[in-house]
Image (cartoon, rainbow, N blue to C red; front, side):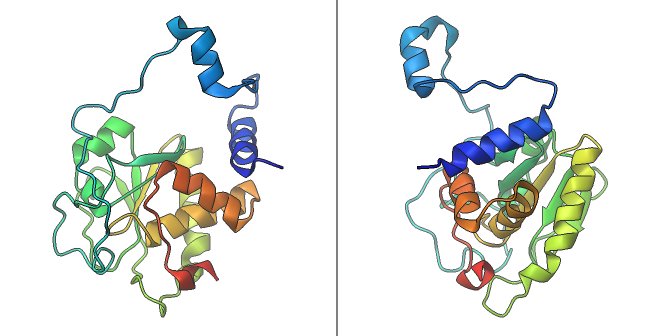
Length: 207
């Protein structure tokens, strides 16, 4: 059976690092670490990027941006989708220290209510859509993809967020992967979900 995530990752690496040789590690990381433990190290989360976890997501998670306090349902910080593309929440977007630590140079704000906190420091693209079945988020795909590509081509990094980093911003990332990596929705969804497990795009966005 074809491994969609592996194929997507390999394809992205081939496009982004054309001059480099790419090898597939037989047996995966577990086999390698068992044979060469001295060459492996445990990944740690940088200080200041750890957020509390929760098993539930409140119904109002994607409704607005009345506060950008640490959301209990969020993960430990923004996640890297591709070397130039990151996904997270409005709380992350309000933390300049997090953004700077990741080398973010531009943000896509996929909400109608969340503020752009640092307009003097980063380039912003606003996509003012609500998280409901009436929202036409697909009409923004071309602009979002063009914006991400322009930042990527300039050597920058884009952080995509909505309120909770669960539905609207995840949908933009899915659209980007499907368009630029020529993968199916289920492959793109699995790829993103492995990096940010709480994503749950509005059903109407997936049509």
